[in-house]
Image (cartoon, rainbow, N blue to C red; front, side, top):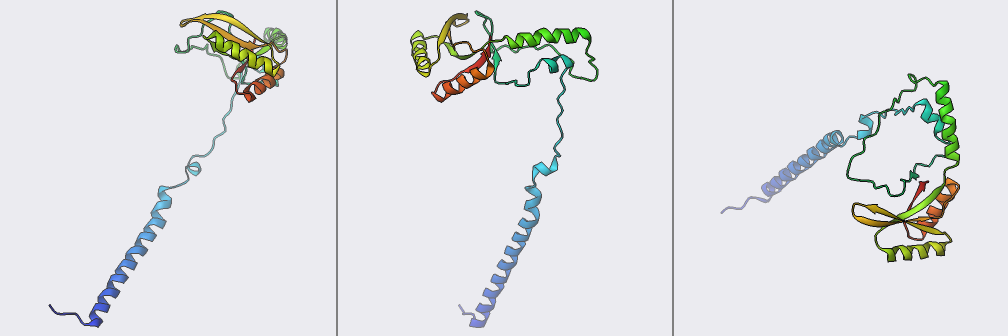
Length: 193
């Protein structure tokens, strides 16, 4: 086996180094060109469209300005809600331009405003099946300074106990009470009566 002269060995190493350098430069150029096309900012592709929401005139008049969407109307006592069944909501005309208010619509909105003003609110802590758990939660509520009341309701799964706080005359009072209850580590929601 014959050894290559030192000059030839050096020449082969230089050729290899040049090929590797050219290959690395080609890969970098490919990444610089192709990757931005693959990783485009998708927000720039789809323009943000304005979403417009229109309400019928009668709904727009009955919604108070201090409306809190976290308030849920309460069900009448003994009512059972089946959460597995889909609810069918009546379809309403959502186009303001085509629904022209009449005098009857304005008169119907006035009692709704009076009803909203006389609505009472409370914080529903939950619905429980264990009476001992309810007593423990009532003790926590009384430590926070809130009176509580229970109501027995019948469900598909048997008798349950609904625990709620005292009745508040104002939505904001109930919301403040809910925040205090949440700060104490309990859960709940503001419901109207």
